[in-house]
Image 1 (cartoon, helix red, strand yellow):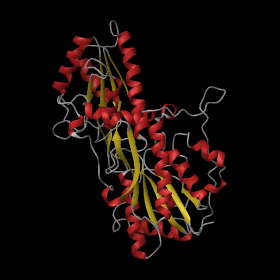
Image 2 (cartoon, one colour):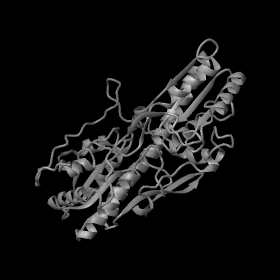
Image 3 (tube, one colour):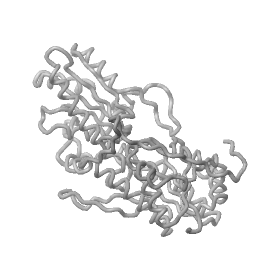
Image 4 (spheres, one colour):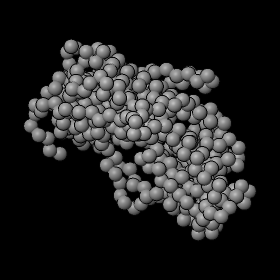
Length: 418
């Protein structure tokens, strides 16, 4: 058994394949005879010293984990502030690491999580504690800097494109006497990657979705209503896909719920699809339906992308390898080597190039009228949704998903209070 312990934790919104990353972390560490603890509910579990002993899980359970959506160890939306502002919390983390002989810390999340891993590495360095911190990429929003794409995005993108194509067939069938406009809301607070993925559902200008609204372009209601009206007149019906985070020219979220901010400091959004559907109905007088897939788009393991699954597993394996090599304050990122045939590899990137940065849609990925994707966007997106990675199914017709035992590791410190 290698001296020292590896601690793995999941953060932020989970994805259809984050557990595949976790499975890869555990399998790679076990092959190197490294003990792995997991934080229960992300960084909160570390602060509370609520740690899970993953050695109690069978190899079969870990294999099944790769086919299971959700976050096997629990996640959280907690953003630690600067080392000065939250110093007591960072020092508590270090105390837990020392108590359990944690020498390697892997934090699986987005840019806020990368920032946490970076700050923990800085504090450990300040105190002279031998700790290697590695960020592990994950987000359906696809907004992490440096990496070509984010594990979790490809599967959510596939779900989005498939769902929009299927819903469009429904709308087309009913449009003569029923729904003429259908509005689909995609996740994406500041970046329109998932909304863009919906554009893969069609090829020609009259194929759904005929209108896509991106956070990267200011929302103009008159222009939007005019385009929907024109599409309905020409095609007979219209499918609209909108990012949850679209804003007006003055920077106001169209779907601002007025409900304050979440624990990450993000404005709580209240449902852009419902708002847009109401405006279309009021101004055009046609029947409108809308949908908010919400968690469905990020938990749909049954229609995961094979590319996404492979990349999720690859970053988990690389994260352990980087950690054991002492590659501190790094993240395994995906580097595209070719579009056709699609090729990719894993490389190391410094966390200070990723933490608290956000990658939005390039201007050349958005059509000139602001309401669709370009050929360049299609070339980027298409490989990411390719391939099927269906889970095994039970005789009852449902997927075989696993639940881990999540046996608690013994506590060694006094209880922590915030």
